Image (cartoon, rainbow, N blue to C red; front, side, top):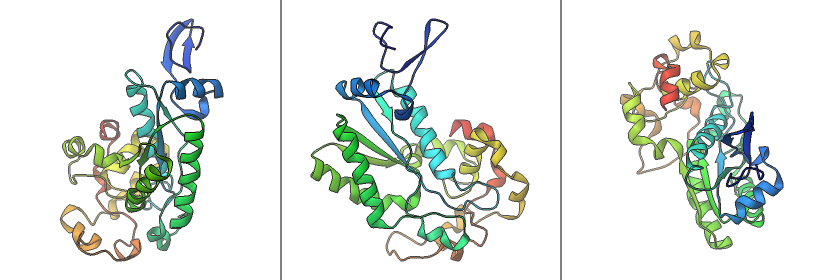
Length: 254
């Protein structure tokens, strides 16, 4: 609120006092964003996917989690550095999930073009530092190449990272039967129980376990060779991991 001396743009008031700093792009006014650009704020652009997540989770998991991780991180970071979270890109590269239904996917050229337009718009708005926060495993390879293209084309620091890799050491300590995020698993189910429990059908998890950590290489292969495989060829029910161990308390920690 500009009327509060020293308050960052978008600071909310409650009963005449500063309550919190707004960090979401589409909740801010244009003049707030212009001021954040002048302060060289970091822009976090969450990127997810809309795809099947087994019979117990909604299709919005990856987009929801990428956006919420970005928002929570930005609220903390805003105490130390100007930061704003752009609206989440809700579709990514999910062709491998199409065989199980409920999936919306982009092709590689469209994904590249969409992100190029968004990054260019953010730069034209006066920002210079952009972080593409990924929430979907199928986006990783493309984003690694894309940020190199953008950094050269726009002569700006553009970076990317997947939230579960950034938090890998902490995640290992929280999860019981896996070391990182898999798919519709202990981790993702826990986070959904923390964020939107009304969308989770835990009753259906008793018969959808696996593959779990020990069998994971049998269904995902290794890094030595890469070939396309549909998700249905890896798991008939769309789950990799053990969602039975999920709790809302774990979700909050994650």
